[in-house]
Length: 236
Ligand SMILES: *[C@@H]1O[C@H](CO)[C@@H](O)[C@H](O)[C@H]1NC(C)=O
Ligand SMILES: *[C@@H]1O[C@H](CO)[C@@H](O)[C@H](O)[C@H]1NC(C)=O
Image (cartoon, rainbow, N blue to C red; front, side, top):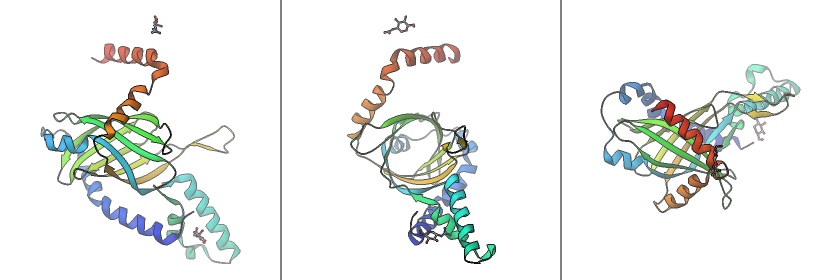
């Protein structure tokens, strides 16, 4: 739970920051198929190692729980349902991006003529070896910056990024599937909506990020090579 004031301020600030993102999303297909390649400058802006520095997330399970508690508290205090502070519920169900984990996103490159890119999330506690997961996506030029749309290999969500300049990216992430364990006691995959801000790290970070990606499937190197070989055979 977090204090209401800062959470609401964070929500309002980030919603304001995301307004251009929402309009850019609806224009994505025309932009992607416009035939306009990304410039070398835009491609360079996208590539590199990004670090999550701000933002918030709201989990569906936490929202349910917060709403239940607020209803219970209101009933106990003889407050009618329409007087429940639902904005405070939203604020209380929101958690800040700045937790114990460090989130980095390594984008080796974006292909200027098609907009295709691959990227890797490096997520872990500072000082410990992070988990490495993959993202694939497409990017297109907009008036607000380079809009990126992608999916992750380990989750069901849609990921949107807007690279606004050399070192600023805003991200919208939405995950729809909520999966429970067989006793319906624990959420094993959560529904979530999140907005984040990223800063580009110095290019020296690429060396370590690349080493982590290369080591990602080390134990199953043979297996992953075979999967890649089968995919190449079938799809190219
Ligand atoms: C929100 O959280 C604060 C601090 O924990 C608490 O005092 C308040 O009752 C909560 N309100 C709602 C509506 O959840
Ligand atoms: C990789 O797998 C193939 C097929 O199972 C096997 O023939 C080969 O010896 C393996 N290579 C290594 C280095 O383990």
